[in-house]
Amino acid sequence: MVLLDLRNHGKSAEIGGFDPPHTMKSAALDVANLLKSKSWSWPDVVIGHSMGGKIALQFAESCAQGDYGESATLPEQLWVLDSVPGEVNPSDGEVENVLRTLQSIPVPIPSRRWLVDHMVKLGFSKAISEWIGTNLKKAGSSGEQMVWSFDLNGAVEMFNSYWKESYWPLLENPPQGLEIKVVRAEKSDRWTPNVLHQMENLVSKGEEQGKGNVSYHILKDAGHWVHVDNPKGLIDIMAPHLESLSKP
Image (cartoon, rainbow, N blue to C red; front, side, top):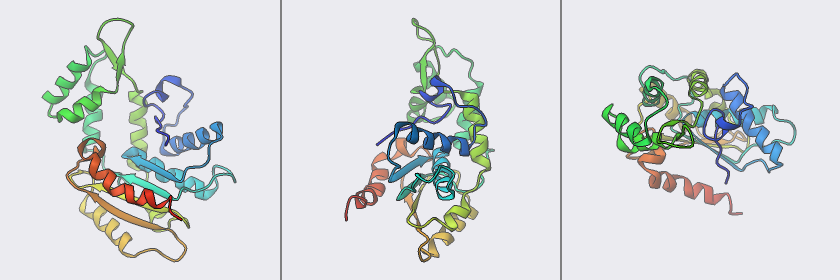
């Protein structure tokens, strides 16, 4: 298993070399370039959460279109975790609220504890606030002051692309041999009635001959931050499908 820090996030933000535009297509190409640079096999499974879900969809779409060259092969399973496949209204979602809040906080930040307490006072849960606190690094060699471990402005540009892109056509006509598995968090705020209706209709049509298939799962007792709210439930959904890959 390989865990990636997307461009402008985590350690990828430190190494640089990720030129604009900061889009879903650019981020998916980063994944392909990493595979090629390391001479790794193309993955059997790709998993993406939130913005990463759309990057995973873009990765599959680009593979199918031959954008990554003849050596590229589609994954067998593509997991999209609480990521609406179509355009998203960025006005009042939880992720958008977090981004606006982070942009309003002056840096350097006094300490990780200060940030967690500040986020809790603003109404965010302690679990989410502590997770946000993990995205800090020391501002210098001494003292408690912290800065973000990711490029906040670059991340915002990526989310602008995330909100605009739509992958409904890919779900409606998945490439042969590709299973797309969409997981919706039960308490997520981004799935409108129209989106739910579209997803349910798409799945109900079933798999067309030789066109792959799409399945839809609901993660109980979880908001958008699935890995924080109900990690065990998420594993329970995914594990049987992942185990099936190792069976003849």
